[in-house]
Image (cartoon, rainbow, N blue to C red; front, side, top):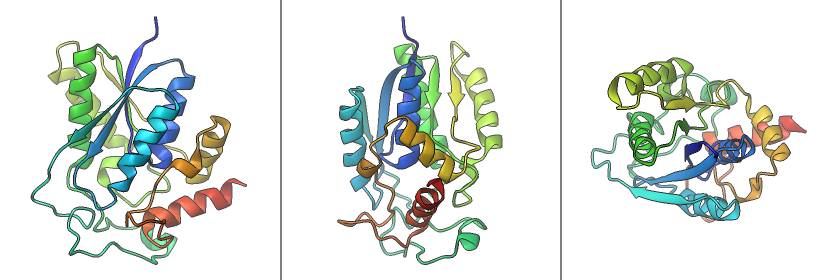
Length: 212
């Protein structure tokens, strides 16, 4: 009998690669997609397409972060664009959503415990990323302790298979796993086409460029 796993799926490159990786490892996957008022809500549609393609059951959880505090939530704020890769790798940009992964993981752990899943997977990355504090290994180690102290079964494991990979390594892994990269959505702007100049677009382009 396959071990159940809850996979956080945003529709982006990293989360999609994580989902395909989990399937390759033999997990019985359940995708959890968040509609949290993000300006790039288009990613939700891409997440659904990917879940359907790989024939994984999915749930869309709609939540409202009325206090905003991020340029991904407040459209009056500008998303940083045309920053150098050095600038992207230093400091915390306005696209940081306060406590987002704390919120997402809390829901995922609850879902996992309810359905008897022993694993929660998230495509966090601490190498080529925008400096978000909730993407670092120390955060996941700390959250694992929270899970062990605050759940009934105490055995749900948080897995971050991409945490130490460069974006180029993630792209190579995605290709090995036959992830439909063209179906993934990374742009923070959420327009008809990727803007190509936001931090997420630039990191994605860097990964694709360096993976060849």
